[in-house]
Structure formats: structure tokens, C-alpha cells
Picture 1 (tube, helix red, strand yellow):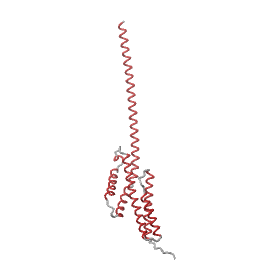
Picture 2: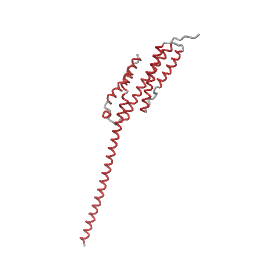
Picture 3: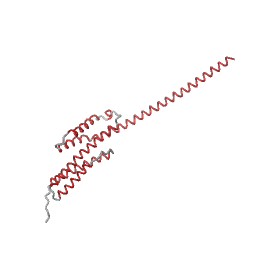
Picture 4: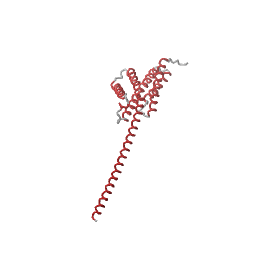
Length: 216
């Protein structure tokens, strides 16, 4: 006789929705990595593991082990939370790299919103460091909202990088022109010095010649 399995379709749909959100986040993070070439350590490994655990529990739930349904949902949610934390890691890594590359630049002169972004990253860091996770859903909901506001930094910093590259190229061009002008000036001074020396020697020879003639 076939065993009837009672399936909670609302639970299945919620698990499906959470898994889809996690998958979209993973794809989003890898797209950012592909564009920037910067790979934060441990990228998305925790979230992918959580999805694997969710699938394992879901299969057991569909096999009739009822308590594994909510375990699958728990791991699907945890996959999303790990994606949030991974994205925060990625954003901080990109921000630190941007600052490190441009320590010799007064960034506010090039990147008009730089101080605004610096404040936002400080607020994000303080939120992650100081906010308790007693209510995980509320914590990660607030974190996701903050991350949403941080994402444009990647694109704005790319524009700023292009301006910085142009500025560096112009600076190098000016330095070359300055060095070339200095070299030409030094050569001109050297030529004039030689000419003056030869002229002086010629004058001395003429004076000596006149003196010798006066003796006769």
C-alpha cells in the first residue's frame, strides 16, 4: 500500500522563494567579481553550502520526514544571510582597494561624493560590529537595506578611477614636458658657457699677440 505524504505547499513555495533569492545574490556577487577582478576570500562558499543543506533537508521532507521541512527553510534563509555578509565583505574589499590605490590623491577633488561614501562605509562597519543579532530576520533586513544603498559605490568608483587615470596621465605628461624643458635649458647653458669660454680664450690670445708685437 502506498504511503501518503502530507506536503505543505506554502512551505515548499517559501523555501523555493528563499532559494531563488540566494541564487540571485550569488549570481550578483560573481558578476561583480567578474567585472572588477577582485575576489574576496571565501566568496559565497557558506551560502552555497547552506543551499546544499537546504536541498538535503527538502528531499528528506518530501520523503515523509516532516520536521525536515522547516530545517530546509532555515538553511535557505541562512543562505540569504550569508549572501548579505559576503556582499558586505566584497563592498568593503572594493572600498579599501580603492583607497589603497589612491593614497597619493586628494580624492575629494576627483570623487565629489567620496566623503559621503566614507561615512556610509563607517556606518555599515559600526552596524555590523555593534548591532546584536537577537532578531536575525530584523538584523538582516536592515543589513540588506544598507547594502542596497552601498551598491552604487562600485560604479561611481569606476568612474572616479577613470578620472584619476586621466589626471595621472596629464601629470606624467607635464612632468615629461618639464624635464624636457629643463634638459634643453641645461644644454643651452652648457653651449653658451662653452661659447663664452672660447670667446674669452680668443680675446686672451689676441691680447697676448698685441703685447708681443709691442715688444718689437
